[in-house]
Image (cartoon, rainbow, N blue to C red; front, side, top):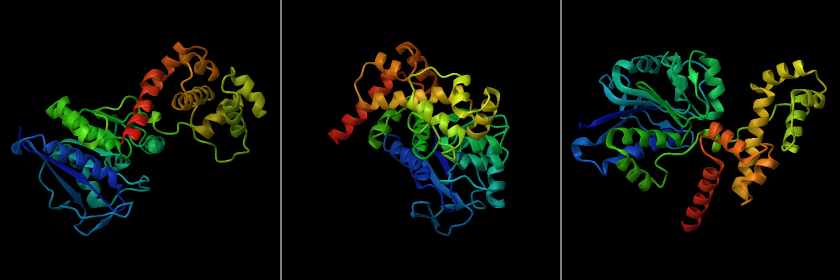
Amino acid sequence: MPVQAVAIVVCEGVQALDVAGPMDVFSEANTFLGSADRYETALVAAHRNPLRASNGIRMVADLTFEEAAGGFDVVLVAGTPTPPEAEPEPCLLQWVKELPWRSSLYGSICTGAFVLGYAGLLDDRRVTTHWQDARALAARFPRAKVEPDLIYVRDGRLITAAGVTAGIDLGLALVGQRHGAETALKVAKRLVVVAQRQGGQSQFSPYLTAPADPESPIARIQDHVMANIGDRHTLESLAAVAGMSPRNLARHFGQVTGTTPHEFIERARVDAARMMLEASDRPLKAIAFDCGFGSADRMRIVFSTRLGVTPVQYRASFRRAESEEIAG
């Protein structure tokens, strides 16, 4: 196979790991590949002046947009800790708009997806970004099919990854697709990461967000549910807690939280169960009962649907992490 030319688009304030993660994957892969089959990675930016990453590291692009007029096998737009508030600078936007003709595969890491959105490349496509910014991405680009819980998504030639370290997952996936699972596993071992994470972003990130006003009716409901997680909750019982009618509660809850009371309750149950699984060796049946699932089978179904792993697999992943930390 020929050399793979990879371009990573960077800008002022870029998230350093969005850049370094994939670059390290491709660099480590080169140690297992022949010289004619290696990855050649270049940073591309509006200019060659030093750029300051969000953590203070300085980067210098290998090529300007004008110089990077040729084609690449893979182009990834790195993100920043917060999504851009407006369209990116014209030279970046124009260069990104041409990615479908400029590269075989193109995509983003973290909030780099917003740049793709402004370039019109997310319309009617399945994409992801950092879990914290998924709702904003969907609101700003309503034609995009945002998958908030996936580590990375490939939709045809478009590839998008979630936040920060998910760029490593994306890089490993690309190496695995091109050179096989064995090579990807070797690279993962060198980087001391798993070759393929089980589950989605929600197993690594807080799934519940508090309302802005802690004294609001919605905050009272959330506090009530969390304090009584094992109880049965209905729209009517929650409306009584909030002092609202069930219809007004459903409407107001959706406006404030972006979800339904039922969805919140199930997420809260998952969050409570996760903490118990991480912190104790209690039987699954007891955890399921205390968290309001009713049965271990029901908890397994919900975990598999929401996190992509069973409670047993979830607990085992934390046991492995603890063992590796102690051994290290």
